[in-house]
Amino acid sequence: MASKPKPQVWKGALAACVFLAATSESCAQSSGTQMNGAGFLSACSRPDPEWIGFCHGYVQAIVDGPRRPAADFCVPPGTTRATIVGTIVEQLAAAPELKDMSAAAVAHGVLHRKFPCRR
Image 1 (spheres, rainbow, N blue to C red):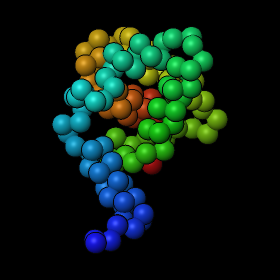
Image 2: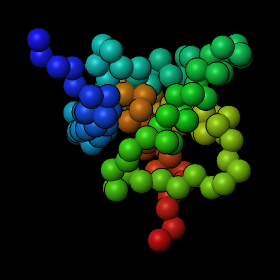
Image 3: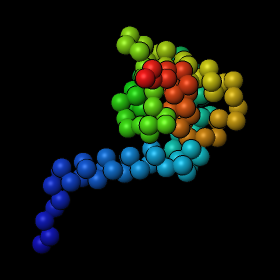
């Protein structure tokens, strides 16, 4: 019987997959399993506490997740998740061409423009 991979191996493989997905140029377009900009706009414009929680979790994962150096962003201390969600929603509402793109790619782009790192 083959031995099961150790949890650290799975964590490393998952981290590598997430990094590759986040840095791939093809990830900008939404696939059937990804939330697109229109879906994010619809979900995150609702005044429903469950959807608000979902959207806050979604953007927190983006803020905490891996980034490409060219798309880096630095959210100032004290910035709320509600502010981040609102900024992304505003951009999606103002730019219909973003609605077919991956919501994560849109969020990264918005955060990069709104919260650039000062070097």
